[in-house]
Amino acid sequence: MNRTELQQLSDERIKDAEALLAASCWSGAYYLVGYALECALKSCVLARVEQTGIIFEDRKFAEKCWTHDLEILVKQAGLTTERGLAITADVQLGTNWLIAKDWSESSRYRFSTQQQAEKMFDAIANNSDGVLQWVKNHW
Image 1 (cartoon, rainbow, N blue to C red):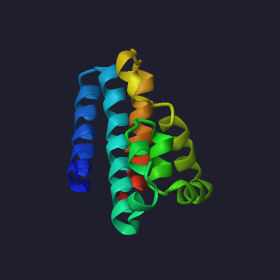
Image 2: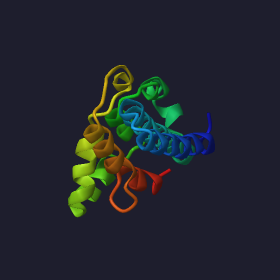
Image 3: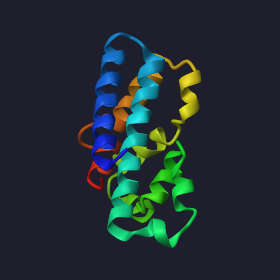
Image 4: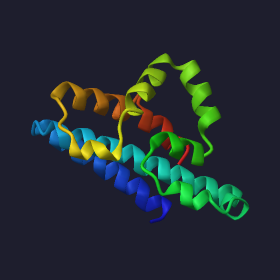
C-alpha cells in the first residue's frame, strides 16, 4: 500500500466506526477506530521513508514496521519527540494519546462496552484534540 491508500483506508475506517457506533456495535467500533489510527501512522512512516531514505540506512527498519503496535509506529514515523512536545502543549491531546495507546490489534477478539467504544472514538477521532487530527498533520 502507498501513503494515499493508507490515508484513504484510515478515513474509511473512521466512517465505519461511526456507523458501528450508531448501530450500537461497540466492539467493532472500538477496533476500527484504532485500526484507522494504525493506518494513519503507517502513512506517516512512509512519509518519513520518502523524506529521509531511512530504509536504506537501517536494514531492519522495514521489518519493524510490520507491527500493529501504535507506540512502535510513532517511533518508526520519527514522531516521538514531536508528539512529546505536542502533548506537553495540549493537555487534552495528551489525555487522548493515553487512551489511544490502549488499543491493539487483539482488541478485535475482545468485547467492548459502549463507554469504552465512545471514549476510544472520541480520543482518536475528535476533530480538535483527537490523536488522528494530530497524526494527519504529519502524513
